[in-house]
Length: 138
Image (tube, rainbow, N blue to C red):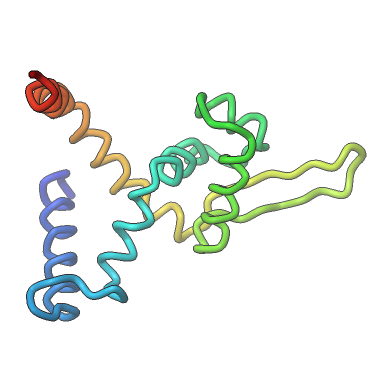
């Protein structure tokens, strides 16, 4: 399946979900498409999921792979992802205690959309930054 086909199928799914759950052409608060967008709207959610794509990681390893995230924010992000069924936490009864996080099957389903957003950012990031500079110019 090509990247374009995946994007078309994603757009069709969002349109179908939106059409089935609209009122006055707006997305309802309980719309499933909005749920998906909310999951990816938090920068650290997508970054953390992407950092887990190659297998289980300890929190310290994740912080090193991600960069720029505080321990508190990483903990909040991991708890949010676990709450949503995207990440599983495994604790080991060792001394010292050890905890690892890994993607669930559901979490893995978000890797392709995250990759698509990353490709879009790579292709269009300069255009967005130029628009921001124009908007900020006196």
